Image (cartoon, rainbow, N blue to C red; front, side, top):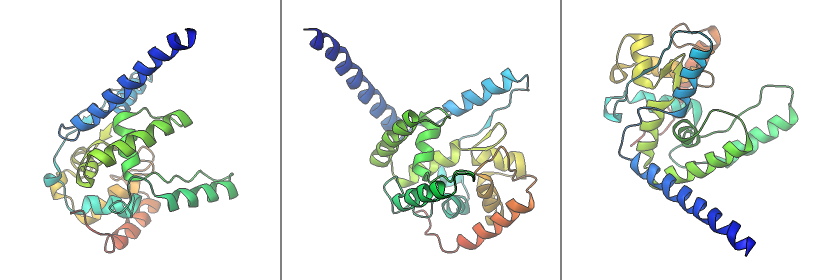
Length: 228
């Protein structure tokens, strides 16, 4: 009796969770993502630190984003984006091996664009096994219900690209005084070069290291398959 009493609410919690998350993912296949948990967290951090509140974000459809932008982020972040199903197992294995062999160095990540999109849109910014588990779940969902074009569109509109700056349209306006549609390949590569840590690295005032990354990305963009 006690077992039944405990299992019944757990069953309904699981059912509600699955239904609500699947419905959310399906809805966001069509609806623009105007706010993300990361934006809320960053705003709270700004207020807590006594800083001026800054949130620059302008949703634009893929048709109003320069063709070089998705190519640049694939060259920089996820060259196998169009061929994998959410996870790059070879990159995960390589990162795990490198982190085991060189624990004193900064840990190497292996998150795909799909994983980053799932994290940005549905989850909180932290490092834990619980959050990683949810990330795997939401990555599988968006790979199931969204096209690669939609994943890229949401990614380019939601990713953090500077202090208080989210998405390619916002960074184009803030750092280059232009629009996402008018970005050159060099500017796209420069933006992509900062993505490992956009709060540390700036596409507006790039360091020599970022300029070097930009050159490498520009070269690799020639060999990356274009988004259909």
